[in-house]
Length: 219
Image (tube, rainbow, N blue to C red; front, side):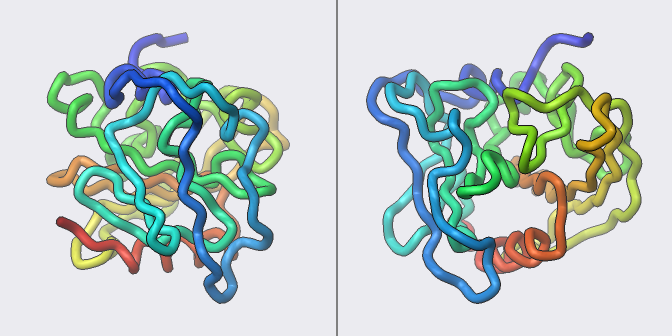
């Protein structure tokens, strides 16, 4: 297995070390959003956090600010600004899905040359790590998912994120545990160095992410 930058390494490469409780920002009700509200997976909302990614949140109606981008969160989700457990930083969490997707500020890591640049034209283009990604899904969170065995681009181009255009890709992912095979989507803003990934796509989750990204504003 390759080793290097991982989802968990975000706590080192993007983060400020601090102490305190895990902070999350909860989305407010929107029509047709993901059902139910809650903290998400068992690991994503633990206490005694030790690190935070280079992001911030506000409590003004369920928005999250990541680097220069502010978005309104889908109903029933929280953005994990801090996590004691590597792999959960930047996760969008719901009661039924510990990491529906990630929003990551990759400015520092990209400047250090510590990532694979996201791209809709390569196999694992949605994954900035240098190790093997895992197949995150509703029943396979970042700490439990099996390793991916393949990732095929099925759609690519450009898609709006607020007023900006992002490099966009949809991927068919295969996994060591075939029950975890899924599709996922990515949006990459190369100038802002912000990566958005939607794990284990469904029509409902697609719609929720599209609404969230349509709400994006930039400072």
